[in-house]
Picture 1 (spheres, one colour):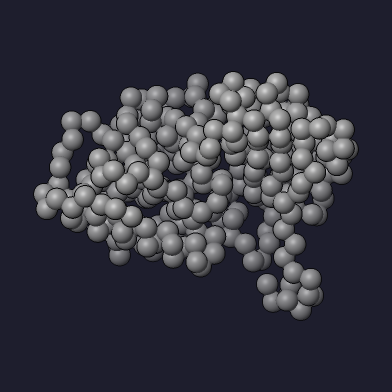
Picture 2 (spheres, rainbow, N blue to C red):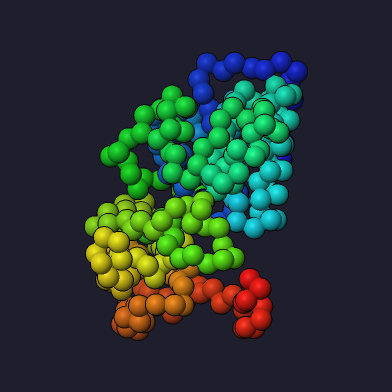
Length: 275
Protein backbone atom coordinates (compact mmCIF):
# COMPACT_ATOMS: atom_id res chain seq x y z
CA UNK A 1 0.00 0.00 0.00
CA UNK A 2 1.44 3.39 -1.03
CA UNK A 3 0.63 6.63 0.76
CA UNK A 4 1.53 10.23 0.13
CA UNK A 5 2.81 11.54 3.47
CA UNK A 6 2.61 15.31 3.81
CA UNK A 7 2.92 16.41 7.43
CA UNK A 8 -0.12 18.65 7.22
CA UNK A 9 -3.59 17.38 6.37
CA UNK A 10 -4.89 18.65 3.04
CA UNK A 11 -8.32 20.04 2.46
CA UNK A 12 -9.48 19.30 -1.08
CA UNK A 13 -12.15 21.37 -2.77
CA UNK A 14 -14.19 18.25 -3.46
CA UNK A 15 -14.43 14.92 -1.65
CA UNK A 16 -12.71 12.04 -3.40
CA UNK A 17 -13.24 8.58 -1.96
CA UNK A 18 -11.00 5.52 -2.11
CA UNK A 19 -12.91 2.27 -1.42
CA UNK A 20 -10.84 -0.62 -0.05
CA UNK A 21 -12.43 -4.08 -0.18
CA UNK A 22 -11.45 -6.99 2.06
CA UNK A 23 -12.84 -10.51 2.03
CA UNK A 24 -15.19 -12.29 -0.33
CA UNK A 25 -17.01 -11.50 -3.57
CA UNK A 26 -20.12 -10.42 -1.65
CA UNK A 27 -18.08 -7.57 -0.19
CA UNK A 28 -16.87 -6.72 -3.69
CA UNK A 29 -20.52 -6.51 -4.79
CA UNK A 30 -21.35 -4.22 -1.86
CA UNK A 31 -18.39 -1.94 -2.63
CA UNK A 32 -19.56 -1.67 -6.23
CA UNK A 33 -23.03 -0.59 -5.06
CA UNK A 34 -21.49 2.06 -2.79
CA UNK A 35 -19.32 3.37 -5.60
CA UNK A 36 -22.26 3.69 -8.01
CA UNK A 37 -24.20 5.69 -5.44
CA UNK A 38 -21.25 8.01 -4.82
CA UNK A 39 -20.70 8.58 -8.54
CA UNK A 40 -24.41 9.39 -9.01
CA UNK A 41 -24.02 12.03 -6.30
CA UNK A 42 -21.15 13.64 -8.16
CA UNK A 43 -18.53 12.39 -5.70
CA UNK A 44 -15.25 11.15 -7.12
CA UNK A 45 -14.59 7.51 -6.23
CA UNK A 46 -11.99 4.86 -7.04
CA UNK A 47 -11.37 1.29 -5.94
CA UNK A 48 -8.15 0.47 -4.12
CA UNK A 49 -6.26 3.36 -5.68
CA UNK A 50 -2.63 4.01 -4.76
CA UNK A 51 -2.53 7.49 -6.31
CA UNK A 52 -2.61 9.37 -3.00
CA UNK A 53 -5.23 11.74 -4.45
CA UNK A 54 -8.10 10.73 -2.13
CA UNK A 55 -9.02 12.54 1.05
CA UNK A 56 -11.57 9.95 2.26
CA UNK A 57 -11.10 6.19 2.66
CA UNK A 58 -13.88 3.63 3.15
CA UNK A 59 -12.67 0.19 4.21
CA UNK A 60 -15.16 -2.62 3.55
CA UNK A 61 -14.05 -5.30 6.02
CA UNK A 62 -14.31 -9.06 6.44
CA UNK A 63 -14.88 -10.73 9.81
CA UNK A 64 -15.43 -14.36 8.88
CA UNK A 65 -12.30 -16.19 10.05
CA UNK A 66 -9.33 -15.14 12.18
CA UNK A 67 -6.95 -14.53 9.27
CA UNK A 68 -9.53 -12.40 7.46
CA UNK A 69 -10.29 -10.42 10.61
CA UNK A 70 -6.60 -9.73 11.17
CA UNK A 71 -6.13 -8.67 7.55
CA UNK A 72 -9.01 -6.19 7.92
CA UNK A 73 -7.64 -4.86 11.22
CA UNK A 74 -4.21 -4.43 9.63
CA UNK A 75 -5.77 -2.46 6.78
CA UNK A 76 -7.62 -0.20 9.24
CA UNK A 77 -4.44 0.41 11.22
CA UNK A 78 -2.53 1.18 8.04
CA UNK A 79 -5.04 3.83 6.98
CA UNK A 80 -5.23 5.16 10.55
CA UNK A 81 -1.48 5.76 10.31
CA UNK A 82 -1.98 7.45 6.94
CA UNK A 83 -4.50 9.78 8.58
CA UNK A 84 -2.05 10.59 11.37
CA UNK A 85 0.53 11.48 8.71
CA UNK A 86 -1.92 13.74 6.88
CA UNK A 87 -2.30 11.58 3.77
CA UNK A 88 -6.09 11.32 4.23
CA UNK A 89 -8.62 13.36 6.18
CA UNK A 90 -11.35 10.81 6.95
CA UNK A 91 -11.33 7.04 7.52
CA UNK A 92 -14.62 5.12 7.60
CA UNK A 93 -15.04 1.40 8.25
CA UNK A 94 -17.95 -0.76 7.07
CA UNK A 95 -18.66 -4.45 6.41
CA UNK A 96 -18.71 -7.65 8.44
CA UNK A 97 -15.90 -6.90 10.90
CA UNK A 98 -17.44 -3.53 11.67
CA UNK A 99 -20.90 -5.07 12.06
CA UNK A 100 -19.73 -7.52 14.71
CA UNK A 101 -16.72 -5.95 16.41
CA UNK A 102 -17.03 -2.16 16.10
CA UNK A 103 -17.77 -1.73 19.81
CA UNK A 104 -14.57 -3.61 20.67
CA UNK A 105 -12.37 -1.87 18.10
CA UNK A 106 -13.38 1.78 18.11
CA UNK A 107 -11.74 2.72 21.42
CA UNK A 108 -8.43 1.24 20.25
CA UNK A 109 -8.49 2.92 16.83
CA UNK A 110 -9.74 6.46 17.47
CA UNK A 111 -8.57 7.63 14.03
CA UNK A 112 -11.63 5.94 12.48
CA UNK A 113 -14.26 8.65 12.03
CA UNK A 114 -17.27 6.29 11.96
CA UNK A 115 -18.14 2.60 11.89
CA UNK A 116 -20.98 1.10 9.80
CA UNK A 117 -22.61 -2.33 9.60
CA UNK A 118 -23.40 -4.51 6.60
CA UNK A 119 -26.81 -2.90 5.98
CA UNK A 120 -25.89 0.70 6.75
CA UNK A 121 -25.40 1.93 3.18
CA UNK A 122 -27.91 4.82 3.46
CA UNK A 123 -26.29 6.00 6.72
CA UNK A 124 -22.80 5.73 5.25
CA UNK A 125 -23.87 7.76 2.22
CA UNK A 126 -25.42 10.42 4.46
CA UNK A 127 -22.13 10.70 6.35
CA UNK A 128 -20.39 11.21 3.01
CA UNK A 129 -22.95 13.95 2.21
CA UNK A 130 -24.58 11.82 -0.49
CA UNK A 131 -28.22 10.91 -1.02
CA UNK A 132 -29.29 7.26 -1.20
CA UNK A 133 -30.82 7.08 -4.67
CA UNK A 134 -33.48 4.35 -4.68
CA UNK A 135 -33.70 4.42 -8.46
CA UNK A 136 -30.11 3.19 -8.60
CA UNK A 137 -30.71 0.02 -6.57
CA UNK A 138 -28.76 -2.70 -8.39
CA UNK A 139 -26.52 -0.23 -10.26
CA UNK A 140 -22.81 -0.82 -9.70
CA UNK A 141 -19.39 0.38 -10.74
CA UNK A 142 -17.77 -2.93 -11.63
CA UNK A 143 -14.33 -3.64 -10.21
CA UNK A 144 -13.99 -6.99 -12.00
CA UNK A 145 -12.73 -7.41 -15.58
CA UNK A 146 -15.45 -6.22 -17.96
CA UNK A 147 -16.49 -9.68 -19.20
CA UNK A 148 -17.88 -10.95 -15.86
CA UNK A 149 -19.66 -9.71 -12.76
CA UNK A 150 -20.58 -11.08 -9.35
CA UNK A 151 -24.36 -11.26 -9.09
CA UNK A 152 -25.75 -11.31 -5.55
CA UNK A 153 -29.28 -12.72 -5.42
CA UNK A 154 -29.94 -12.54 -1.67
CA UNK A 155 -28.53 -11.27 1.59
CA UNK A 156 -28.09 -12.94 4.97
CA UNK A 157 -28.61 -16.52 6.12
CA UNK A 158 -31.16 -18.38 8.24
CA UNK A 159 -28.94 -21.39 9.03
CA UNK A 160 -27.60 -21.62 12.58
CA UNK A 161 -24.36 -23.49 11.96
CA UNK A 162 -22.29 -23.55 15.15
CA UNK A 163 -19.04 -22.87 13.28
CA UNK A 164 -20.29 -19.82 11.33
CA UNK A 165 -21.04 -16.24 12.44
CA UNK A 166 -22.53 -15.06 9.13
CA UNK A 167 -26.10 -14.63 10.52
CA UNK A 168 -24.66 -12.38 13.24
CA UNK A 169 -22.92 -10.22 10.65
CA UNK A 170 -25.31 -10.34 7.70
CA UNK A 171 -28.69 -10.89 9.32
CA UNK A 172 -31.54 -13.14 8.19
CA UNK A 173 -32.01 -14.32 4.63
CA UNK A 174 -33.62 -11.78 2.29
CA UNK A 175 -34.12 -12.65 -1.39
CA UNK A 176 -33.96 -10.01 -4.11
CA UNK A 177 -37.16 -10.15 -6.23
CA UNK A 178 -36.78 -12.14 -9.43
CA UNK A 179 -37.88 -9.33 -11.76
CA UNK A 180 -35.30 -6.99 -10.21
CA UNK A 181 -32.54 -9.53 -10.77
CA UNK A 182 -33.53 -10.04 -14.41
CA UNK A 183 -33.49 -6.26 -14.95
CA UNK A 184 -30.05 -6.06 -13.29
CA UNK A 185 -28.76 -8.86 -15.54
CA UNK A 186 -30.07 -7.06 -18.63
CA UNK A 187 -28.31 -3.87 -17.54
CA UNK A 188 -25.04 -5.74 -17.06
CA UNK A 189 -25.38 -7.46 -20.45
CA UNK A 190 -25.91 -4.06 -22.10
CA UNK A 191 -22.52 -3.03 -20.70
CA UNK A 192 -20.77 -6.05 -22.20
CA UNK A 193 -20.86 -8.48 -19.26
CA UNK A 194 -20.87 -12.05 -20.58
CA UNK A 195 -20.69 -14.11 -17.39
CA UNK A 196 -22.79 -13.88 -14.23
CA UNK A 197 -21.36 -15.50 -11.11
CA UNK A 198 -24.33 -16.02 -8.79
CA UNK A 199 -23.47 -15.43 -5.14
CA UNK A 200 -25.30 -15.33 -1.81
CA UNK A 201 -24.71 -16.66 1.67
CA UNK A 202 -26.80 -19.62 0.49
CA UNK A 203 -28.12 -19.80 -3.09
CA UNK A 204 -30.37 -22.75 -2.27
CA UNK A 205 -32.57 -20.63 0.03
CA UNK A 206 -33.44 -18.25 -2.80
CA UNK A 207 -37.15 -17.47 -2.94
CA UNK A 208 -38.24 -19.11 0.32
CA UNK A 209 -39.00 -15.79 1.99
CA UNK A 210 -40.86 -14.03 -0.83
CA UNK A 211 -42.19 -16.90 -2.99
CA UNK A 212 -42.61 -19.51 -0.22
CA UNK A 213 -40.60 -22.03 -2.25
CA UNK A 214 -37.04 -22.62 -3.36
CA UNK A 215 -37.04 -20.73 -6.64
CA UNK A 216 -33.45 -20.91 -7.82
CA UNK A 217 -34.33 -22.98 -10.89
CA UNK A 218 -36.79 -20.37 -12.20
CA UNK A 219 -34.34 -17.56 -11.53
CA UNK A 220 -31.52 -19.32 -13.40
CA UNK A 221 -33.86 -20.06 -16.31
CA UNK A 222 -34.88 -16.41 -16.62
CA UNK A 223 -31.28 -15.21 -16.34
CA UNK A 224 -30.36 -17.73 -19.01
CA UNK A 225 -32.85 -16.04 -21.35
CA UNK A 226 -31.15 -12.63 -21.03
CA UNK A 227 -29.61 -11.77 -24.39
CA UNK A 228 -25.84 -11.42 -24.20
CA UNK A 229 -25.29 -13.61 -21.13
CA UNK A 230 -23.11 -16.51 -22.27
CA UNK A 231 -22.14 -18.11 -18.95
CA UNK A 232 -23.94 -18.47 -15.62
CA UNK A 233 -22.01 -19.99 -12.73
CA UNK A 234 -23.42 -20.91 -9.29
CA UNK A 235 -21.39 -20.23 -6.13
CA UNK A 236 -22.23 -20.90 -2.46
CA UNK A 237 -24.87 -23.61 -2.87
CA UNK A 238 -25.57 -25.47 0.39
CA UNK A 239 -25.96 -29.27 0.00
CA UNK A 240 -28.87 -29.62 2.44
CA UNK A 241 -32.19 -28.94 0.74
CA UNK A 242 -30.60 -28.32 -2.64
CA UNK A 243 -33.37 -27.70 -5.27
CA UNK A 244 -32.67 -30.53 -7.71
CA UNK A 245 -34.65 -28.80 -10.49
CA UNK A 246 -31.58 -26.59 -10.92
CA UNK A 247 -29.74 -29.62 -12.34
CA UNK A 248 -32.40 -29.91 -15.05
CA UNK A 249 -31.82 -26.27 -15.96
CA UNK A 250 -28.07 -26.95 -16.16
CA UNK A 251 -28.70 -29.83 -18.52
CA UNK A 252 -31.14 -27.93 -20.73
CA UNK A 253 -29.41 -24.55 -20.99
CA UNK A 254 -26.09 -24.26 -22.78
CA UNK A 255 -25.13 -21.03 -21.04
CA UNK A 256 -25.55 -22.47 -17.51
CA UNK A 257 -22.21 -23.98 -16.46
CA UNK A 258 -22.06 -27.52 -15.11
CA UNK A 259 -20.56 -26.12 -11.94
CA UNK A 260 -21.52 -25.94 -8.27
CA UNK A 261 -19.52 -24.33 -5.48
CA UNK A 262 -20.73 -26.35 -2.50
CA UNK A 263 -19.32 -26.38 1.08
CA UNK A 264 -18.62 -29.83 2.49
CA UNK A 265 -17.31 -28.97 5.95
CA UNK A 266 -15.77 -32.29 6.90
CA UNK A 267 -16.10 -36.03 6.41
CA UNK A 268 -15.36 -36.92 10.03
CA UNK A 269 -18.26 -37.21 12.52
CA UNK A 270 -15.91 -36.44 15.42
CA UNK A 271 -14.55 -33.35 13.67
CA UNK A 272 -18.06 -32.14 12.84
CA UNK A 273 -19.03 -32.48 16.50
CA UNK A 274 -15.98 -30.43 17.47
CA UNK A 275 -16.92 -27.78 14.91
